[in-house]
Length: 263
Image (tube, rainbow, N blue to C red; front, top):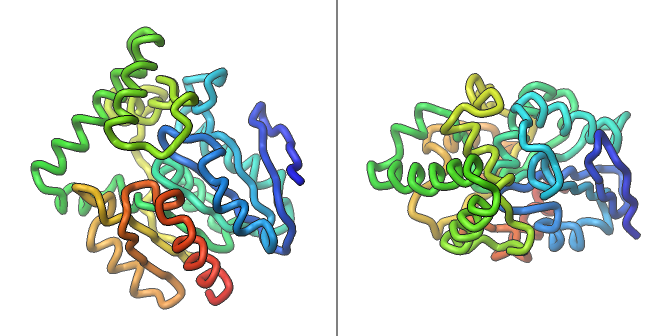
């Protein structure tokens, strides 16, 4: 049975039972629907919370700052688990905003799982990328940033085209230019930009899952090595593309469940 609540105009979906709560944060160009296979797997033992990130619903605003998104996550976490810490499960841009929330409010985090985006704002990552890798990242991200600022019907077409090119594993009918908000924040400084993000240095148990079938990584070797210095953490590669939770759902779910039960 699915329970829904509304927190600051965000519809929040709650499924499952258990003593621990998993809050799921998706990335581009997804919605809360991207977590279906994780919810079906974990809901027997965990309370699973999903929602569409601020700016990603077609009828939502498009002027959220980093602080606005972090505070929306905070409000939702406080609403669904007011007295207990939560487990954060994040992918792609959900990692960027989720890490910022977790670093600002570490006392609210029991454990965290990040998927395929690590220290995205670090100098170490930039130094680790090849020239071709930097060019590829710039190319698709600047196109998406442009999709956010051009007339909406043109931007929608651009966003769908890029999603097809990147083989996004989502409902294509949901894709719209407003989802490109984080790229416009990064490259054009819109909505306050993405400056001064806190370093991703988790003080709680952390599982990092990353995909192998892509031309560049979104984490630095130094950051991943630092994670492994803490025996409570886990790092695991998956032989698939960026959308691990779809392409390798069974393998990821089993691995994450084991780590959650042991860490």
